[in-house]
Amino acid sequence: MNTAAITAVGHYAPEKVVPNSYFESYLDTTEEWIMSRTGIRERRFLENGATSDLAVEAARKALAMRGISPEEVECIIIATVTPDMFFPSTAALVQHKLGAKNAWGFDLSGACSGFLYALATGVQFIQAGTYTKVLVIGADKMTSIVDMEDRNTCILFGDGGAAVLLEPNEEEGYGIIDWVNYMDGSGMEALHMKAGGSLRPSTLETVQNKMHYITQDGKAVFKVAVVGMADVSVEIMKRNNLKSEDIAWLVPHQANMRIIQSTADRMGLDMDHVMVNIDRYGNTTAATIPSCLAEYHADGRLKRGDNIVLASFGAGYTWGASLIKWSI
Ligand code: COA
Image (cartoon, protein in one colour):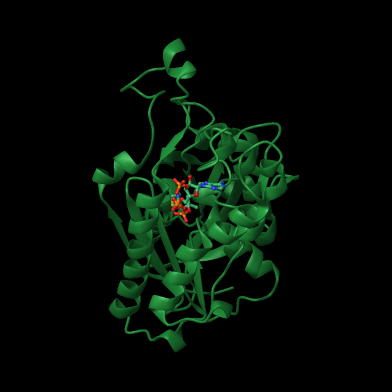
């Protein structure tokens, strides 16, 4: 069986930087509260365009890094909860904008675990020998579904996109070694969007009642996320007989610095083995994990042979972890 490896990475952060002081200017909040309770200092807002634009920019960077043309891509999987529109899929829009005319693809809705779900899906095409070039992208324009008057949620999220290219692994023991994903739909109550879907199609009333924004019970989500992300990270270590000292990097979903720290603690990792960019981007949902990979790779902090644990928790609830032996 072929194994799959990440052979290129790309991250796109929109230009507009929005510091915590922006929210202080019109909401009952402070820069210090946001920083101390979340670890977020600033985030990016996409002023023009949509999720597909974030995805295309990220994909272009990944393809440029690998030195291949868009025509060589065979499949595009986009993890997002903020598709440009219900249909066609964001993957179709990205395929067109990118000029990836030989690719098919689809969107995958896994919220903050979307990238890990998409990674596990993309890996199947490589392992089966069906394809040799699969683009897996996490992209979200969270500002399109956040109520900017709700201090409980608007401070948390940002816009961003990041992409990885999956190819067959050339050397045994490298690439995506293992993954485990979970879901518990009873978590819907704590984190969801009330209207705009088939349950409650958009009406004047749903818009007036702000039902097209994120509804979140932050405290409830925090409690399950802090346990779930740590549990699944420890599980993937145990399944692969890895001790803390064997792990070069934890790449956690960037939702809250306290959830990240607590996961690292449970894994027995110092924070200098944990990828963090939440301070600069906030929670970009499906983009957080690949954005970390791309940034740390660009900085030269990732070494071939590093054992890397990716871990996430998000709406659904959804959660998961993947183990990679870095190969580039
Ligand atoms: N500024 C100031 N105060 C705020 C605030 C803000 N931006 N947002 C909320 N508060 C208030 C709350 O209203 C609450 O006040 P009350 O006690 O009078 O009701 C108080 O701060 C403490 O609220 P609490 O929920 O205990 O804060 P917290 O320490 O749990 O932090 C979150 C709130 C949202 C940052 C945190 O719960 C969290 O990160 N949850 C997970 C969210 C998440 O990860 N979502 C994405 C899916 S992965």
